[in-house]
Amino acid sequence: MTTGDCCHLPGSLCDCPGSAALSKSVEDNDIGRPQYVTQVTTKDGRLLSTVIKALGAQSDGPICRICHEGGNGEGLLSPCDCTGTLGTVHKSCLEKWLSSSNTSYCELCHTEFVVERRPRPLTE
Image 1: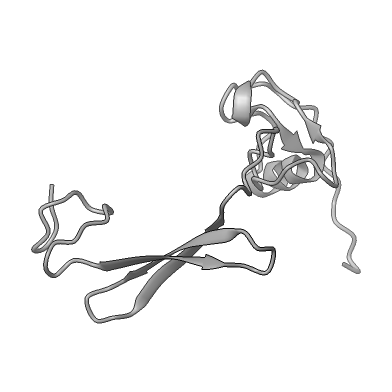
Image 2: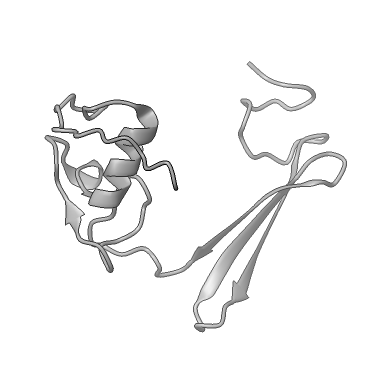
């Protein structure tokens, strides 16, 4: 399936005439590490997104599967049967996720969590 004048699948970045333009550059940040900056624009020149990724910013340690941050401030838990990068979460992230999704189980491995639902205070 293709869209418009492009010969690629929808959502792919290509250089076909009439498709979204893609420009890449490398910049230095305040820390001194180079960053990749990718800008995607539409046919009429509007900026779709800017993605900045610092080189060396990825750690080899575990990260929270919800917020994608490491365990620097708050420790990471393994509350269910998920393993690998999907197995660790911050307690606060898990609580917010369960509250907003209105579930009491892991949607990947179906482990049930003990969830105590309390009404929010009226003065909040």
